[in-house]
Amino acid sequence: MTEANKGGTSVAVGRAATEDGVMAGPAGDTVLDVRDLRMTYGTNEVLKGVTFSAERGEVLALLGPNGAGKTTTIEILEGFRMRSGGAVSVLGTDPAHGNEAWRARLGVVLQSWRDHGKWRVRELLQHLGTFYAPYSSEKIRRPWNTDELIEAVGLADHADKRVMRLSGGQRRRLDVAIGIVGKPELLFLDEPTAGFDPHARREFHDLVHRLADEHTTVLLTTHDLDEAEKLADRILVLAGGRIIADGTADELARRVSIEAEVHWTVDGVRHVHSSADATTFVRKLFEQHGSAVQDLEVRRASLEDTYMKLVYGMESGLADGEDAARVLFGEDQRSAEEGIR
Amino acid sequence: MNASAVAIRSGIYRGFAEIRHLLTSGPDLFNMVFFPTITLVVMFFLRDSTIPGTDISIGSAAMPGILGMQVAFTGFLGVAAELVVEREDGTLLRAKAVPNGMLGYLIGKIVNATINGVIAVLIVLIPGLFLFEGFSIDGVSAWLTLAWVLALGLIATIPIGAVLGSLSDNPRNLGLIMLPLMGLTAISGIFYPMTALADWLQFIGQCFPIYWLGLGMRSALLPDSAAAVEIDGSWRYAEMIGVLGIWAIIGLVLAPILLRRMARRESGSSMAARRDRAMQRVQ
Image 1 (cartoon, helix red, strand yellow):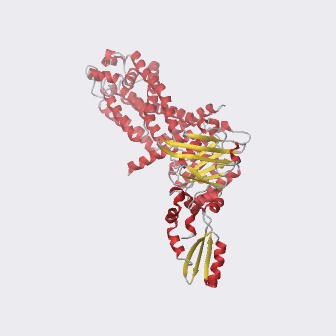
Image 2 (cartoon, rainbow over the protein chains, first blue to last red):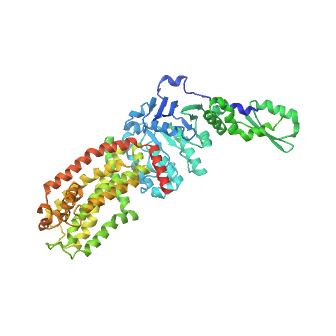
Image 3 (cartoon, one colour):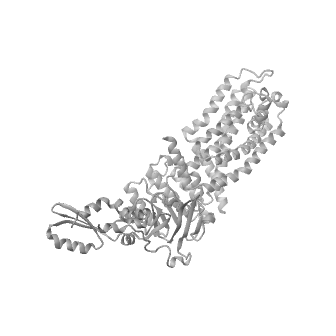
């Protein structure tokens, strides 16, 4: 039995849900405040008490397995779906009663839209922008200047193309452009970079950072954990109808997956071992094998490892952490057992 | 200017933009012109046979009815089809995500459907005036009759089209609307005087707008003597306005209720569900 088996528990970390000052009510800078959000379809309870909040300018990534209720959560926050229970405040308003002035402060980018195929890019952005003009203020000028916006999302070469002639990645960038044409204070992005090539992805990340610098709060869902780590100030993991983790990628890794993986080679044989105290382990390793130890590598858990552990730990039940680990680390475990004896 | 006024103005722009897209897209133009062209050609070959007992050619007599049918089909099907398709492709959800976007969308649809109706009439009317003897617009009163029949016809059919479109979110069901509409056309005296039909079929036909639109167009475009072959030997304006008016009221009452219900239910996941269903159809 190795250390690796002990990790499959779920912990709420960082600015976790239920305690501390966030509960003081929507202060001036709290953009999103969700408490004990519940959603039931028939007898199926999808959300069993989701609690989190976001400050102005924060970028939040909402992760979770398919069917965990990410889209449901976002749709409730967008005001597109009525909730079954709990308290929700989005920009200081209950989304169930949000008016058009409230709507003007939100940006929404959903998965896979293919509307307005016959429109040209510039024409469409110009047209949709006009709806936001009445909601322009001294502080926030709405809408975004069409040409600047097209430039910002990297569609300058395609501004006069019909939307249906755009490639998948270009289409997605247009979706993002439409989402931000009204200079939203809060932007919802549902899997924004699906279908992007690495270059487009990098450009998109820069755009999100720029929006965050201008104090736009962003809530995004993604299956790309690398992207979540790069973009998000804070990561929320939704599984089993609850937020099971809430914190920075580092905080999550530190709290959930305390073991580091140590890889090394002795006499041409590769070894792996998981250890809570990698430093001590490595010292012992050298005491035992001396200069025979080669290719030494100490790996902190990646966000992906952390996520897998959290979600599988959750899904297979808290008491059943061993099984979760076996599913996940089956091979690693075997090689670890073949390690130093 | 307040936000609703801005949305209405943007909606009007939207309606015209959609017409521009229609007129600059080859396949759309083809669809628009195809059926009227076929009909015109057929009618042109029938121009020498006359309706028994009169000297009016079958071609000329059917032309106004075809105009009426064009109005009815554009109003019913055009709007219904666009609502169903645009719900599936996300246009409606987009409108919902934009402030006052639904208002702008609906204004756009009304403008678009109205212009479409006018175009559908002109496509048949203009060549018809050159091709058919006895089919002509004589004087201001004929133009006025044409205008009010067209206007009332659009008000009677567009809201009903919106109702039909909001009831179904599956493009497949459009066929279910199309078929009864074809059947209705057959018993609405479009191509042949209605008096040739059995009484009960005449009764059904007269319950729906297509017959009255055809009658109204005939009253504007045929000589008054042609009224002789109509039921009661008259254009029956009072009944015409009555039936079309009732349909207009039904549509105008139901459409906002159903459109609001449709808009309220629209969400990303309902759209995704429809897309999945569409994919299954393809496979």
